[in-house]
Length: 216
Image 1 (cartoon, helix red, strand yellow):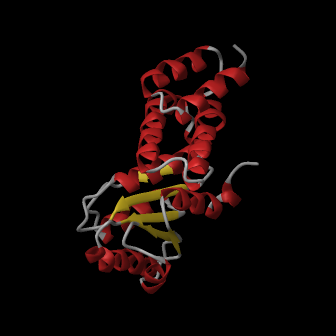
Image 2: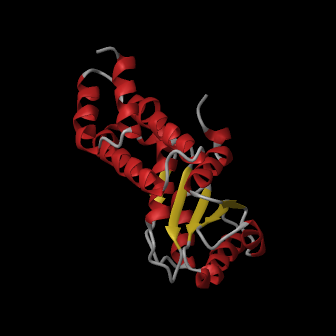
């Protein structure tokens, strides 16, 4: 198989949610001389782009996003250990988590997968994350973006706490919020730099904000 055919196979595996075969496809790609970077960025990531387009077109829905994300993660188990830190870090660093008081993680996990597929370095701090933990991680990794998810409106004050902590600390991270109960007006009222209406839009904003750092 040619390199182009191998990359196309990785792309199609994402679009078809072929999680059972993704590991062997990734391992074969490496054996055939395809770099881990190419496998992720020019193979799997292209599949995630198609999935995002189909979601926005109304052809795919939340379950498909979840399955695509899980398939991507399976490939990353193979490619991830072969990636050079500089290949990902140079694109941008994202800290992502669900804010304090909320244990929901589906939306966060989808955004994390799609952002990682864009070549960005993702630091997932989990769920029920305090402002102090967000800030500490943002400082530790010099995050370009701190992305927060919430599915409970009662956690809006905690989002504001994170945003206020970031600004008071003078950490140069931009803040992005998302989740079902949010809208643009609420995001603005709590001081967020951006709002993602859904996982695909959130991931696209992260790509736009870090575009200047991405290698040409």
